[in-house]
Length: 359
Length: 235
Image 1 (cartoon, each protein chain N blue to C red):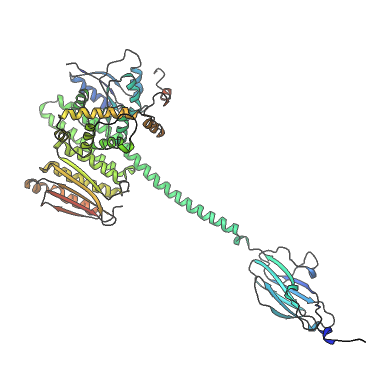
Image 2 (image 1 turned 45 degrees about the horizontal axis):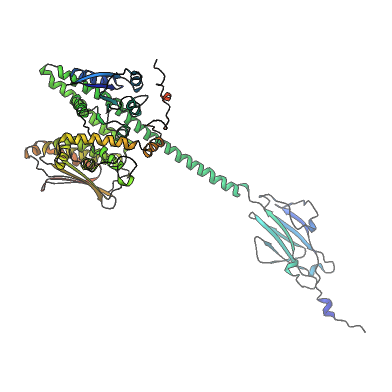
């Protein structure tokens, strides 16, 4: 006896094969190197071949109309989209990347094939050359090259100026300094053998040329790029104290508090501070009866500097009136570097200069 | 009184002639040698019948062999001569190097000839001069933390260096330490001698060679003299 189960026939799990009929790229027929029907991978495309359309078909001869499709383009969509048989799909302006077109079909009974059996066609759309990593790297390299070049150029310029400063200062030092020394010595010799009435004049010449040397030295020191640090200012201050105070038997004390000796100082601040100091010391040596001078450089505020010059003498009133002690000069110099300037004569003579920002 | 025999090495003609004329006029001095360069000086003293020199005035910045480089060679021929460096401006580093190499004093050409003459007397009598900047360098050099082998300063020498560092005048130092003013100057000269001896220790020599300055080119330190072109007889 034969038993017949219609259900088992109807729901059989066989599926029609899915084939591609035609592929268009940029809406032009794309001749595939092998039979397009069974291909599962396209050859490497160009970045501009980014509009692709596919005609596909399920090989079902009994009832082709009953077949339905689902497709999705892995790499762009995750959802399945339904389509009829024969099917057609067009993807326009795809971004560069790797794609796989997956197709599922029903059989004539309307049963979907499992996703694992999907008909797949993968293709790769490379990025244009200007969007490749290599190109980015090259761009980065070029930009950093240009930046580096500009930086180097500016550095060179700064170095050039600095070298020029050093050269000017050492040339002036050596050449003009030697000439002025010679001049002073020659007039000194002349003075020894000169007639009495000419002696003061010749003495004046030696003094003038030594003064010229001293002034030149101050200027040269101020522009000398090698002497940009606070410690250079201190050296110069000590040296000057020795020149002006030691012959007068005035003791000198220089104290530094909470300042970094190697800190760079702008040339004009360094110069003006020094000239204020120099003027103050000249005053003490010339006009005061002090026997002690205390100079203190200390931190002022968060990023400032305070210089105080304090002696224990009394200024002769006559000198104060006639010369003004160059106080207006010092005040002007303080203003030039944006510093506050105070004087206190209640106990000796005290000069205080305060700069908010000195470096 | 026996006169002081002086030699001068100075490249600038005006300064050289000024020194020659001024010092030559004084009966206290006898100028035994004048040279334009270190090379000329060394050529003049290479024979055994070389002129006597008590005090040598040596320009610190000579063309060719510099004054500092020349000191070592001068000390070979004239171990007892007092070398006084002539400087245009106070170049502290160079002065310190010269003192380490064996100079015993220094004076700037900016000062008057009278002061230079007095400095020669001071040196001849066994004294010297020290500025606060140099005093600080010396204090640092003999700093106990950076102690090198060799000679160290006596307590009295240290007191004098410290006094100068502190900005005291020689008179104040003399008063403070209860000694004569000239004694202070004598101490300074002896401090420089200690500095020279100390500097010849290996540490310092190595340091100088590393710095590529080659100030002390003695045996084993190896700067061939011919390199300077004066080993051969001068044409």
